[in-house]
Amino acid sequence: MDALQRHLRMPVGLTAPAMAILLVVFGIPLLQLLLTSLNAPFLSLANYQAFFKQQGNVFVLYQTIKMGVVATVICLIIGYPTAYLIVMASKPVRIALTVLVFIPWLTSGLVRTYAWTVILGDHGLINNLLLDLGLISHPLPLLYNRLAVYIGMVHIMLPIMILPLLSVMQGIDKSLLAAARSMGARPFAAFWRVFVSLSLPGVRSGMLLVFVVCLGFYITPQALGELPDAMLSNFIASQIASSLNLAPIAAAAFILLAIALVLLSIFGLDVSGTQDRTKRSLLRSRVSRPSAVGALWRQLNELAMSYLAKRWAAQLYLTAGDSRLPPIGGSIFVLLVMTFLLFPGLVVIIMSFSAGAFLQFPPPGFSLQWYHAFFGDPSWTGAFWNSIQIGVAVTILSTVIGTLAAYGLSRCSAWLRSFLTMLLLAPIIVPVIVVGVAAYLGLINHGLIGSKLGIVLAHSISAIAYAVVIVTATLATFDRRLEQAAKSMRAGPVRTFLRVTLPLIRPGIIAGAVFAFFASFDEVVVTSFVSGFSIRTLPLKMWENINQQIDPTIAAVGALLTLLPILWLVALYVTWWRSRLKLHGAPVNPIA
Image 1 (tube, rainbow, N blue to C red):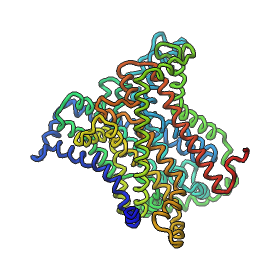
Image 2: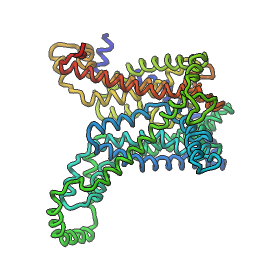
Image 3: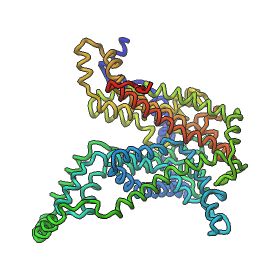
Image 4: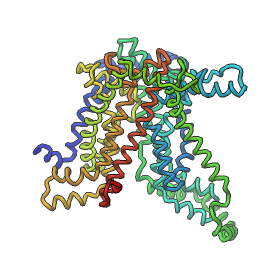
């Protein structure tokens, strides 16, 4: 207790447990990986030179960057108007649409990739529909090609693009658009010059997140594409499986990591507090125009002033809803995007009740045979139980350590908080294949490969990052005067934290625990490196079955994993609702 009180008086010490796990599992092994790639202690670039001398390696690297850029651009083209339309909707609609974006983001990426094999397969939804309509005479090759890989990547990454955009767009003052319109700007000019400019931090963060994650894509290219569609992550994984020489693997991993770090160091990630800075940069860009251009601009403005004044007076009292086309078009667009995000999960749920012996949509009949097959097969139930045990252990560990770290970071100086936060978030902002290789190296040094403890530690470095992000956001809105009031009543640091701070930030802690559990329960790439072929989690079992055979039992598992985040969201809502009722002094169950 005395030690905890000393740490609470020196908040940076609360980040020590999180930093210790990060260093042991990720930080020190990453440094060892770097030294290995440099042939330490001789320190040469021979491995990097050998990588770039092989034309096949350069092609795979180029293809990885190209596919990441294409997927990022597509996500931006779809995600930006979607986020804008969500923000401009009424509050109930905005909340509902945001939840609908969250659901696929929380759903297992492996399940969503599997869903596209059902939709795009020879006996899938699209081919069966076209065959029934008589538009084609034989199935189209929609699966195992580059187009299928792009569809799968965009489907997985689109929520990651939309959510940062929503975060920034919700902080933009909508009256600025009205002010621009009142000054005579046309609707598109007002939108482009004002709203788009202020939303650029969200665009930057969304594009960075999507591109960096796409660099580490491993499951989707292998499940939906062919060998020519492989990315550098697939190359690294195959090298680990077939070679004991770690130096070229380390070089390939650090080339991938270097691309991500260069982009992050140049552009950074910032989705808050950027609006004023963006306004100032816009102002500077206007003031710094060359004087001749500025003079010409002023003359043109003076010539058009009388026309603009008349036009403004004529349109001052016109309503924004004179044309029904934009609202209808926007509604259709959002409906299509939500269908794209949610329909694959619905297909998996429907397929799980199929009476057929192979994947076919629509299913030939209704049956629970694949649920019986799942619960009656010890290999499936054992993998499910392993995932539950590991997920619960990761949730408890990461929630406790992440909450302490977030509390300590909220009390640190700004520069130290930024530095430590970036360190803690490293496992979720660098390519996951690099995390897997580093975790493998770190755990093998301690003899933990193939153990549940090793998997828990490997999962925890990412789960702690999620907990830190969410609890820190909750603490940002916490009124610290309440703690000062408690201390003025002679409450010690520990009692103040337990009796005042903890109850008020409990919703954030619960949300962080939920995200930590999902981060562990859905993990397959890192698990494939550290499980040592001795422990099978549910996602790893699914991935092996997808590679070896398309067993419809996977549809039953996918349906359960699709419904799981919905149940979690309902539980979070009930928890929030009960806390609100208690806060306002209302009875929790007024009907009883």
